[in-house]
Length: 374
Image: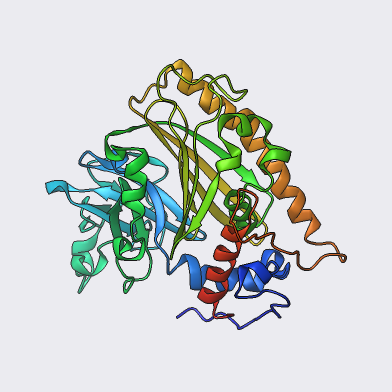
């Protein structure tokens, strides 16, 4: 059993009322002991994003994902059954599969133990000469899995409640802006290594108070004055009517531009529908240490080959929006070590305007509650 030492910060001026509250103290972004607690209490208890359903549509298709220091593989076996396993050999714990791909069976690179796609041990070299060897004992260890809103999620807690029960109406909300998420195709992935705590990255996504200052092209793309954030139990929505079709971000095809719609789902994944043709992007925020984060930005379109307009949208995110945001959060992470800073006032107004930071307060409260600090 993993035992994590208790290390509770003084919450200072954090308040249950968002209109009176300050941020969580800076220790929550820098302290290795708090990060160790988050690993067990948050990420090993939550539903973690893996991929789009189309990425494991065929028998033998697999995708791997890391949940901090846990390596997981999702694989579609025979009879169209989708399963998730700890991605380690039952012999001596060598990692089995990497990235994504297609396989008829799983072979360990260390001692060539092989497994069926349902996780059962197929062969172990020399097993007939080992007294009392029981193949059933060495099947891959399974992980809880759920398909939700066109995507695959896993949970390391065998007693976890179903995601569809925890996420409320999120799937319906997404469908209202992207009618056929399961029918879209994976088209591209952008990857970034960020020198910032994962919560710092989530914070930045959850407010548009900084947008007018830091993202001038994005402000053209959406109607920023009518950008609204709403919070729910385990997610929040961030919706704006369309901005100018001749915006500085990228060219939107003729016809209805559509809204910008985004959702954050606890603890660290976002879904985004940008103006233009049918699309959804997934920003997966994966902590790799107390002050480091890996981001994957996955794009899903009607076709696996992006159109010129879709390529422009990818380039805008890769060359403009992400560099702007990464520069912000890495500067904040450095600033959190300042002896002149501990907490800042959350700017939350009664009207919950586009500048309001109530989405941050909602997130911070969830973190504190899950850690048992609130």
